[in-house]
Amino acid sequence: MLLFEGDNGGGHLKESPVIEIEDLHYIYPSGVHALRGVSLTIYENEIHAIIGQNGSGKTTLAKHLNGLLKPTRGRVLVLSKDTKKLSVPELSKYVGYVFQNPNHQLFNTTVEKELAFGPQNLSLSPGEVKERVMDAAKFFDLIELLRENPLNMSYPMKKIIAIASIYAMKPPIFVLDEPTTGLDSYWKLKVLEMVKKMNHEGYTVIIISHDMWLVTECAERITVLWNGEILKTDEPTEIFREREILEKTKLRPPQIALLARRFGRDDILTVKEMEDYILSRVSYNLLQP
Image (cartoon, rainbow, N blue to C red; front, side, top):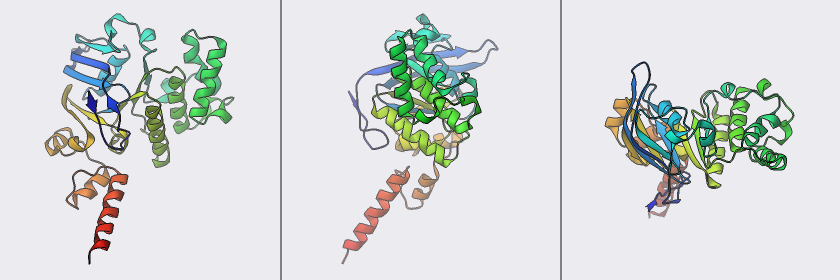
């Protein structure tokens, strides 16, 4: 039984693995050995971030979770089911994959049709499909946009609708590929709020990202990939204490963490943590005679 603490979307009791990756190797037809002996367990209701530079194997790993790729060697279990034995449509009941570019995912002429497409392919009744559509529309604040064409909307709104379209299918596991790429700070906050809200409802959320702000704000654990191998899996604070790993992978901590280091603190990663630290110092100074 595992306990992850903290308020980074954490504080959950973990005991049930939903993803089990064992000695995973993947070699592309071109001969590129993209994954080399990856082993990783992700738990129910966890927010787990997978980070690394381009070419590190992040997306290749993510595509094994929904069956878009099958292992060359090793195995991937999703809810104890071997992905080699399941088709992509079968796995979509368990793993919802949101692509980095929403233009690769959206194609219907209204938001309502977009939200209905996934549930319809699960062979749900018309009544159940409508219920799923309305639930997703309320959750993502899309009620007023149901009749609108998503293809004509802004890039940030397309991102939200793409996530909502997968949410309507109610898979227990979400994989979000670079969910904040191309977004300004306002929309990044929106995505962060949605991730935390989804996790609060009991969903497991796996984030593939270059955005260190996002992963430190919400991830309970982080896996660092480099050259197709896992360098480390740990809580965010421990990951960003590893100067050698950061230098090797060229990963830069969030700005607030760099600022905290000037105060001699390497355990502060978020604005909330910095705020708490400053308030504690002010309170301490006020209490001094």
